[in-house]
Length: 90
Length: 422
Image (cartoon, rainbow over all chains, first blue to last red; front, side, top):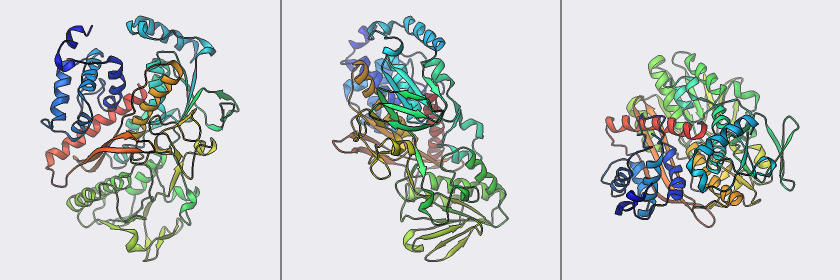
């Protein structure tokens, strides 16, 4: 299911189970039940999630919480989160 | 788990392709048992994640006395009139219906750690392979001379959400014109470090509108507090001249309180209040004490797993634990619960265990659309949970930024309560 996506360099090294575990940190705030104040990200394109996280990591997007979260994620963790959230129902 | 919910859960799991990758679901008493005591941000999250992620392979029982849980976080916003009381109440129904958690509404009275059993108020016992204690705080009523269980109706601490917050709101709304609201924050360490100062902001918000000549005096047993610069700048901006904060060095120490005369005596002076919120010192909930996993007032834990140092079959989450750099907050408890859930699943079902990763953000509301926040990432050190990186709102942020921070906090509230109860 993720084969096509994993061929994308940004998603290289993605590990679904690791993504599931790491997603716990995101799900404290990001839930599909609400888009108010914090966007719902379930089912978003994997590349979109990976690119956003990299922009936050590089502090090219503003938001202290997201910059903090992304700063602690390496490439494999970002890829794992991206494919995991992509797999969730919107 | 009752038969009906187990059946519906298993049929759901069978419908999922992910079952192919999961270990076989064992049935009935052969399944490993996890008992979770306390249905707050730590306990509800732990129960939900262990049940959800083990897909029925672990039998999860949640013991929580309340049928309806009112969150401590956002109770200040109810106090300030920004939220309806009902909007901070949540039911446990989805935990059983969606994840097969066996929710038992009772008190956990004692733990027999050698027999691995928890005794309940009803007299029943529940066996466990792993026990998660997330009991929150108990109030040390005797930590302030003159304070007591009885005193809390006159001088509510309102530090466990629920009905006391309603009492306090009524008292503030009915305060005499030009009267004095006194706040005695707790000494460190305590639940929700910015909480007393958000509470002061919310009371000031009510008084500014309904009783503008009233005063607020804060008699603090500390000399500094969380987000101090941000709160004090906010009070000056929104409620000029209304809030007087007196640090411990200035008043010299709180000697006693008198709920009959509504007086608070310090070395410096005796303060007379019309309404007083007195929040005493705190300690881990009684069941953690009873289980023998505390050292002093709190439970030391192994940072990588949240297992207690005293008993590797018992995990302590949230306020009751010694989480070192992590504040005692709902966000912290929720974060710790996921680390513990992952570890417990690994121990009981051989699922993969990933390195502990913790985070926390505390949002506070200073006035309408004026939100501030502080947050950090943490890692498991050998002995302590350690800060990796942190941030705090800046005092010179514009109104649009503060409004966005408040809106973000609403998103967080919706998120974490979904993460706990859905």
